[in-house]
Length: 508
Ligand code: AMP
Image 1 (cartoon, rainbow, N blue to C red):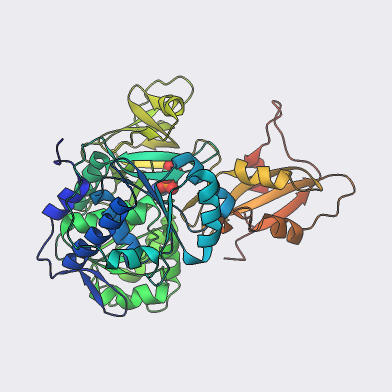
Image 2: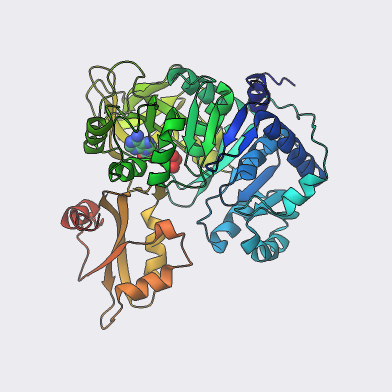
């Protein structure tokens, strides 16, 4: 077996002087590259002691903390696949993930450990460990007793490094299988395209259960031998305070709208920063313009997804055009196909965005047929609609289906509608995303009550809370006599979106 494409071996090869800070905590304390190497070795020893074998899954649903990030590195070193889960997922959602992924170890918050242990017994998950927001827990206790060296388990390029569940555009969450070669190729391409070097200090304020914060941000920093200021969460005032000590920020559009609300956002405040990156959801051209006006810096927008990592990016040099996601990245092919016929379309023609390259995932976990149906002659069908303009810039014009992206998280309306329709007093419902300055889109429900029902918005909220992750809960609920339908009987969500399009204007 070769370790040439082993992601951690490559990271190790890129490591600077081990005394250099890898993570700087907002209070100024530091974890060096050497610390990361030692702790990841200890944790890898714990994983192996718990029976983790090459190819096994390590499922992790914990708050963002430095040890949680190192646990990702430890999993790579142990030759297993890291499976991070959004902390917003409820216990019933977790049950699905654990039963589907069959992990050998599940690492969870101390608060949920008892409930998860009961689930684990039912689902035959052999080990449950804890890790709290404070970086303490049973897995850290076990690590303290382990050696700080570890022989990294060799892995081939196609072996799995991570599985990330994504709702994508078609209902129930599917596990996207990402190989060592997928992640390594994307990290190296992005590092070079965005000119990351060992001199960089990234403000890391993204969650680490998603491709953006974990792979794009984390892997690039390691492959550049750079440092990151590791924030537990995004706080606009705090991020602004940190900018004089940093060089780069990666964010979702919400970060930038919130930064724009800070009176302290000026040219001087951002003078030490060389790059602001945005992605995971569309950045309004208005936000791009306002940010440039205040800071003199043009936000660099890029486009990617769980299944592929990053596909396109605005250029580092050259025009960063608001409302576009830039050029296909080096080594990645992007084309536009007619969604109905599959014919490949020319410049300026709108169709389905398809991508091919070393970044494209290995398929959906346990779903070979689903995987095959998402490819078109070797290209992955992203589910996004867009065009490539005459200059070669890719534009996203919408989503093939009705996926809602709120605060950078995907919400598939069908899932929320299913929960609403099951409530007493509901005849049917339609869930849509509506423009919201802060969240990009806000989940909104339109409900038809059964005759005589006096169901209220508050009752709907109360019933859904706890059944669905918070980010999936409708921000507003409207009641109507009937849903608009086309001649084929399909609910016309575009009509609903148009009717309610301004309702969050006053809120945001
Ligand atoms: P996820 O798998 O959670 O990363 O979500 C991927 C989806 O987010 C893509 O398929 C797009 O619909 C959307 N997306 C990501 N980046 C952008 C962007 N820069 N502009 C518009 N949509 C984006």
